[in-house]
Image 1 (spheres, chains in turn brown, orange):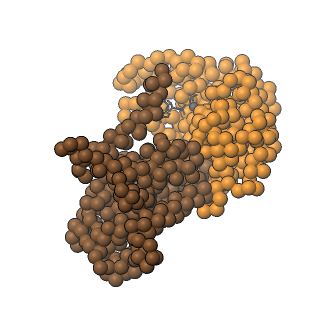
Image 2 (spheres, rainbow over the protein chains, first blue to last red):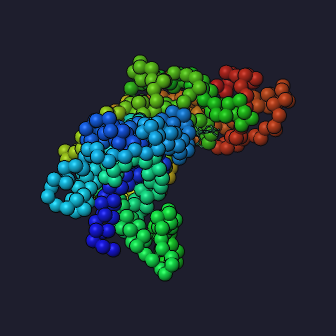
Image 3 (cartoon, rainbow over the protein chains, first blue to last red):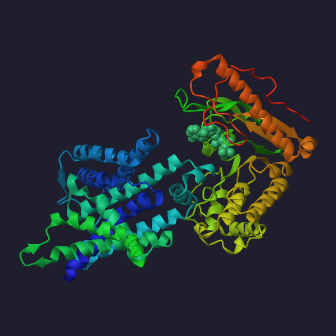
Amino acid sequence: MTLAAILAALEQGCLYGIMALGVYLTFRVLNFPDLTVDGSLPLGAAVAATAIAAGIPPHLATLGAAVAGFAAGATTALLATRLNILGLLASILTMIALYSITIRIMGAPNRTLLGLPTVFDPLSSLGIPLYQASPLAMAAVVALVAAGLIWFLHTAYGQAMLATGDNPAMIRALGVNTDQVLLVGVGLSNALAALCGALVAQNQGSADVTMGVGTIVAGLASVIVGETIFGAPTVARACLAVVGGSILYRMAIALALSVRLGPLAVSPSDLNLITAVVVILAMASPHLARRQRR
Amino acid sequence: MIEILGIHKWFHRGTPQEVHALQGLDLVLEPGDFVTIIGSNGAGKSTLLSCIAGTIAEDAGTIRFHGTDVTSWPEWRRARLIGRVFQDPLRGTCAGGTVAQNLALALRRGERRGLGPGVRRAERELFRERLAALGLGLEHRLHDRVGLLSGGQRQALTMVMATLRTPDLLLLDEHTAALDPKTAAQILELTERTVFSQKITTLMVTHNLAHAIALGNRLVMMHRGRILFDSYGPDKARLRVGDLLQRFHEADAVLNDRMLLTEASSPSTGEGYRPAGHGCPPATNHREGHGPAGSCGHPSQEKNP
Ligand SMILES: Nc1ncnc2c1ncn2[C@@H]1O[C@H](COP(=O)(O)OP(=O)(O)OP(=O)(O)O)[C@@H](O)[C@H]1O
Ligand SMILES: [Mg+2]
C-alpha cells in the first residue's frame, strides 16, 4: 500500500467512524439493534446535497442533515415503543421508507455537488496538500464527535441511557421514561449516521441513494473489531475503540483491494463477503477462544 | 396515607387460562405503617406490589397517595413515590455501571435528568457514608462494577438505592429469599433499621412467618387475590407462627368447601378440582359468586386504633 492509500483509508475510517459511533450507541449502549442507519446515511447525504444546491450554507445544510437523521431514528423508536413493532423490524420499515424519501428529496437517485461549496472548502487554503489535510480534518471531526459522545454518556441523562440498555426494568423503577430515552438514543444514533452521510457526500462530491447499502454491517464490523482489538473496559475506551475499529476496517478493505493472486483479484463487490466474514470471526473469537481452553 | 381500593387484576381474561389474581382488594396504609404480607404461592402478593408500582396495569380500582390519584400514572412517574427491592438481586442494579453510578441513578429517582454530571463529587461522600453504615466494606468499592459484587452485596446496594431518597412507599418482594441465611438476616436487619430511622411506609412480602411476625407493626395475610386477615399493633405482636398456619389451613378448608359447592351446583365448570394443600393452591382459579361469599372465610378485619 502506498502512503496515499493509507492516508485515504485513514480518512475514510475517521469519516465512517462517526456512523460507527452511532451504531455503538444503539447496538451496545441501548441494546437495540437498529438497521435504520442504512437509510439515514444516504438521507443525510441527500439533505445536505440538496440544501447546498439550493444555496444554503454548507454548515447549515450539514446540521439539517443531522436533524433529518434524528427524525428518522425517532420514527423507528416510535414504531417500536408506541406501536409495539419489534425493534429490528421497525428499523427495517423505516429504512425502506427512507429509500423513497431520499429519492424524493433529491428529485433523482443521485445528485452531484460539483462546483458547489462544501464544509471542506477551507482545507484547500491551508497550504498543505489536500490528501494530507483531509485525513487530518476528518480525524479532528471524529475526535470531536467521540468526545461529545463520551461526555454525553457521563451526564445524568447519558447514565440513564446506559441503564436503559442494561436493565430497563430497574431504571423505570427509578423514574426514567425508557421509551423517551430510546427515542433520543436511536435519534442521536441516526443523526450521527446522517451527519456521516452529509460529510461523505461533500467529501466525494456527490450524494447517491445507494451509498447506504451495508452501512450497518460496516458499523458493526467497526464496533466489534474495535472492541476485540482495543478492548472496551469503560465507555470512553469503547468509544475510542470503535473509532479505531473503523480505521482498521477501512485499512483492511484497502489492503484486500490491493491483493492480487495471479488472475484472482478482490473486486469491490467482494467486500460485503469479506466484511461478513470479518464480523463473524470477530464475534466468534471469544467463543472460539473459550472452546480452545477446554 | 396511601389508599389501594378495589383492585382487580385478571390475567388472560376471557380465555380458558383466566386467572383472577386480585379480587377487589382494599388496603389502606397509614403513614409509617410497616406491613408484612404473607400468603401461599399464587396468592397475588407480587401482582399487588406490581400494580401499586405500575409495572402491571390493574383492570379496576384506584390507587391514591396522600389524596392524589396515581392510577393513571405510568410506572416511571410513580417511581418518584416508590422505592422497590425485588427477590432477584440482579434486577435492582445495573451490572455494567459502577457502585457510585448506580447510587447516582437512584439519587435522581423521580427527578429530571439533564446534562449535568452523572455522578458529582459531593455525592460520592454521601454514598460512602451510606455504604459504610452497611458494614460490608462497599464504601471502598465505589468504582467497582456492580457485576463484580455478590448477590448479597447487590441486594444490600439495592436496599440503599431504594431508600437513598426517602420514598413515600417502599415495596419489598421477598427481597431476602435468594440470599443465604446469614446475609438474609443482615439485609433484614438493614431493612428494619432503614425503615425505622426514615419512617418509611413499607410493604414487605415474605414467606418466612417468623420474619413476618417479628418485623413491622402490621401483618396482612393474602389468599387468592384477597386479604384474609389483617392484624395491627399489639394484636400483631401477640401472633404466633402456629396461629398463622392455623389461618392458612382454615382458609383452604373454607375455600375447598366453597369449591365443592360450586362443583355440585354447576357441573358445567368442567375440569375437576384438585384440593389444595397449604402452600400450593391449584393453578387455575375458581369462579366467584357461587358459594357463600363474604361469610365465614372472609376478611375478619381486626382494626385497632
Ligand atoms: N404475568 C402473568 N401472566 C399470567 N398469570 C400471572 C402472571 N403473573 C401472575 N400470574 C398469576 O397470578 C396469580 C398470582 O400470582 P403472584 O405472582 O402475584 O403470586 P404471589 O403471591 O406473588 O406468589 P409467590 O409466593 O409464588 O411469589 C398466580 O395464579 C399467577 O399464576
Ligand atoms: Mg411473588
